[in-house]
Image (cartoon, rainbow, N blue to C red; front, side, top):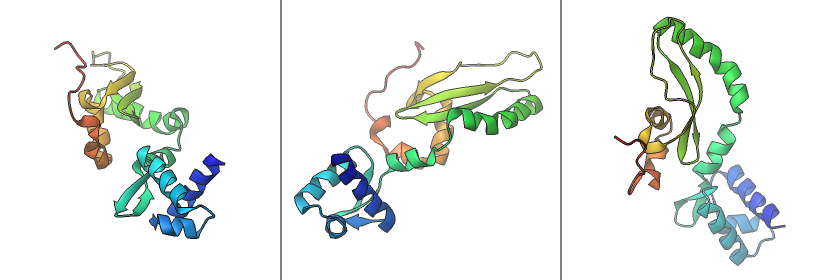
Length: 160
């Protein structure tokens, strides 16, 4: 029942683009106090976000979830050949990274066939503030830099 109510609120906001709690209540049987509480729960986890006083839209977290509909395996099937071609053409290593919560994960590396040494940081997660891949992700997802994830004392990633 609780999940159904949350889902219904997301559907109303998603269909309208933006909605107030009053509009959500008009499309449902939810009492206003319950709707306010549920909307605040959704805002708290990033599934909704306030756009004006009392008006809400789909949140950046839900947008990321719905826009990342490709599994790593499917993404690699599409992108790995292009990475391999680039590595061969430029004689350099190419990385595929994905944003994973508050970190960036390198999920695939294509290396040149030249036998020349190259820098390879290995696969796995990296803190947002300590990885060059984060800069590339931020170039296409500017709202990443507006989050509080990059504020305050940041964990050292290396000993240097």
